[in-house]
Length: 224
Picture 1 (cartoon, rainbow, N blue to C red):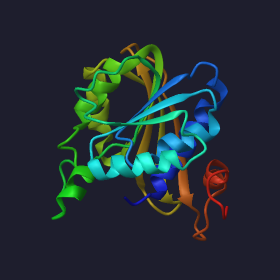
Picture 2 (cartoon, one colour; picture 1 turned 90 degrees about the vertical axis):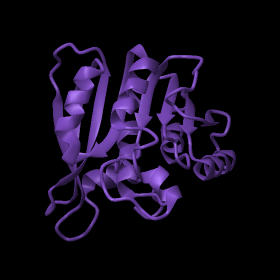
Picture 3 (tube, rainbow, N blue to C red; picture 1 turned 60 degrees about the horizontal axis):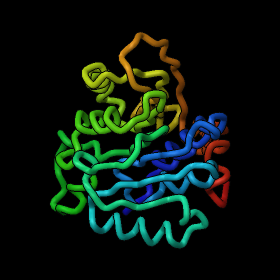
């Protein structure tokens, strides 16, 4: 499966945000773990965390197991083959992360494997946030990467599922582009909270990685 730049940015962003809370983050769930990218990025920066990465797709799960086994973090990252909607986890999680399939209302690929990976029929946005609500510890936090164009829908679903936003980060492909992705940080409960707003661009107007992007990814990219 292809590794996207925005997924890498998301992994670096989450690891940076959680860095100051290492002592509080023990159990982590990666919903739709794919090939293990986010889980392994998080494990690299958070040595105390035990990470469960659940993935429904056979091929992605197999690749995740191989990637995890060949990494230095095999004792702390566990690939789970299953459906997050009905899987019985044996714990509540201090942190839940997800870069889910988010093309559920767009044109489908002819390749059915790609359909599972890129469309929300296997896990809709509403179902994702229900899983987060049910499996997040009372004082836990979550991070999710989603398309910016579904921002209003996201806020409605969060309210309905009793989750609150504490931070929003809008992502541009470059300083010349409009927003195309959004990172949500939140927690349980629907209490009114002040939502911090940030933004980041991947490329500058000279088609070079921005300073912010480089700082987040330099420990993961060999050539930054």
